[in-house]
Image (cartoon, rainbow, N blue to C red; front, side, top):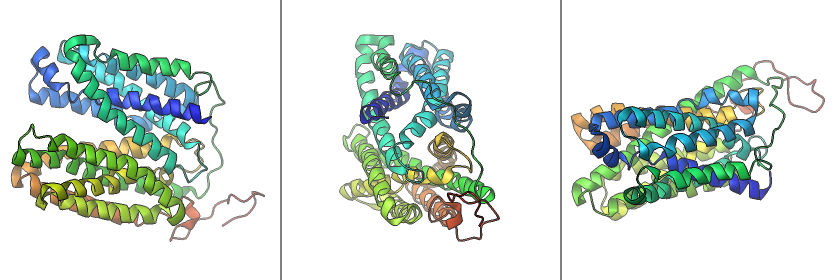
Length: 399
């Protein structure tokens, strides 16, 4: 794809992730319109997160049948239809239906569009385009909901329609460049199958632990600051913005560094620094908290794209499956795990719960990541590789 096509795909991600994030700030509007209780609204949010993330490994399988471009285009249209209808929901059932349709669309779009972005780099070096892809989506998540919430009083049910229409228009406009039919991916002969599959499982497990640490500090830090300064204090949203912005920019920086040093080494250092910074947040003054949140954003959320290459199964031509496993399944599991953290917060308080959760999940991520290969080639692992056919040009060499 050309640079213009990649930029267009990034704009689609900006709009889609922005629509995905509209539900959370619209909760007060939905509550007043539907009469739903906070617990019911929390369930709707949980359903939305599950549909948008946990389904990605399943929807990624459709790529092998229909191709990356067709699946990404279908996902964009479904996401526009579902999420675009969220402000129009008159009852809880309609809200659930809207976020499920949008979530399925998001689950279709992310692995396939991420795989299209990954094709901009050679195999094993996909982390940089994927980091840029994630950064654009993060920007959409920060900016689009603000515009929708501000306009909901004047536009009502149609508040999200302009963004949804833009997403559909981009899909149509890019049909000849990005979404034209292509041959379906074909499976190739597996290389170091047992070791490669083990690497994929380790990458997902490490990603889930990193995501749990990131979700915990992102959700808990705002509550801690609000308890000291007040819920309406401007430091609360700016604190979350500093985390997200650092994650977006830092993810690209880590990806560039990984090309020189190696993905595993960069991952280990980043997760260690991010975990330490996050764990200290409850004990810091306000200014230092901003610095710690920025370091945590880079080290935790910014490190997830580094795991994608390790998550590819042997014989996978497309990166769609790996994107879905790490940026979908692992991130979804980690985010869902925050529900259990709530019980710990009730028992010991937000500050101790934040520190304990980040320390445990960050340590677990480091232990798991230590067993990843130094590179994405399973033959570079510390453990001996079982007999397998190599990738040499003649195709007859064996390990």
